[in-house]
Image 1 (cartoon, rainbow, N blue to C red):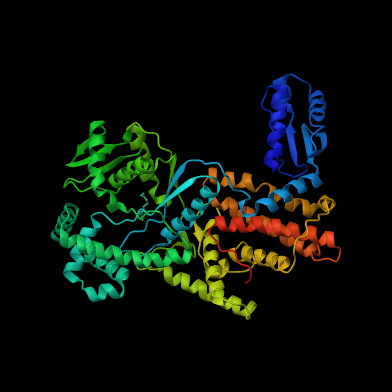
Image 2: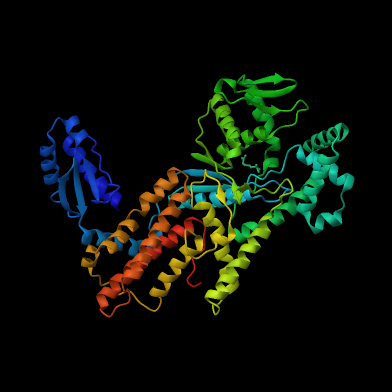
Length: 553
Ligand code: ARG
């Protein structure tokens, strides 16, 4: 809504001056909007005082602007609080959960996220990718895009040669079925411990055979994959995340030859010690390996094939890869290669930092095995204990604990700039106070309990919005659309998180300084309508982060 007012003013001024005029939201909130006049005076060669008078006259018939005054080089504008509140309340009450949605079609966005490697534990890095990707998927959908969610499973590559060799040498089916992922991961570790030239040679041979379609090896690989997917599924169900396609790397096996051919045709490849590479030294991006000397393809080859396949199949306007910072070079290379091939795909590497535990990298390798499922279970236990203490008579305690725990983990991830590393402290993220998921859920629950048992009558005392806190809440609600657009442009769910924390804090301040359920009917109804509107926005925001909205907790 604030954007609408801004646009309206800008259009008016553009028409008058034939010149784009800046309209800002002043940081220090001394006014609702402000027009910096110095530059404008220089550009139009009109005196500042004259400009101020002219603009004031131009805006005099704008109902939504109540006050225009000159101060320290700026023309400050204040909104007509009553009319503005009326417009905002009406919009949210009418649209409800559609508030913030864009109806017109905006094109297709492919989001490649989560993408764990089969036969390995789902790592905390994959958790970050899943959480960020799922949130972006919801955000793009809300803003009018058609979203294609792809899980680019790491299910192909020379490591499966090793895995198969190790399994055939040391493995057995019973142990595999009991605890598939740990078992396979251990076999893989053993392979490296016992590693020697002949073992490596054998693994390379087996992978080549696999690529040629050897039935026995394929069947084993298939079994590893199935078992892995079953365990990944548990995590996706807890997080309530789904994909449109599980097209892993293996899906592109038969599509890499064409890519190699294209690269050759364009003269982009050269031989290096028997292998095929694309030299990106000119771009300062090193070299990219496309084919090993034995003809086996690589991660990059399959990513190139995937990219072209996706473009042909979905005709996307934008493609997002939600992958950690450590693959920055890979995605720069991917982008550079396709550019050299003559394409200009909008490739966005939605990168992110590490998850730290006590300041150290949390990994699933190197002895420090942290199994995600165990961590989640622990979070659920903590949440159960908190609920048991705070609200022992709550119905569906288990279900509530589960959604509180998962939302806490999600929010801990999305509450700050994704580029940064995040600390993984279960106690802290599960606290009901502070910058946490449960704090937001609890704020929504508090609003729900106010709204329970009351029906909104529609009668509003608009003069109440002259009050500072009332109006702050309305203004915050009114910038939701702009906020979502900014988050989308920067692929930054944390902007939504920050906004929600602020909204909840404002509401809680309002709640502690104003009595909401009062005797006077119209005041009560105004308070509750404001509560309803704030809750609608808060809940919409929570849903965009893929968190669960609760009515009780
Ligand atoms: N499986 C990879 C990993 O765990 C991530 C894949 C990301 N997607 C992609 N198209 N490269 O590191």
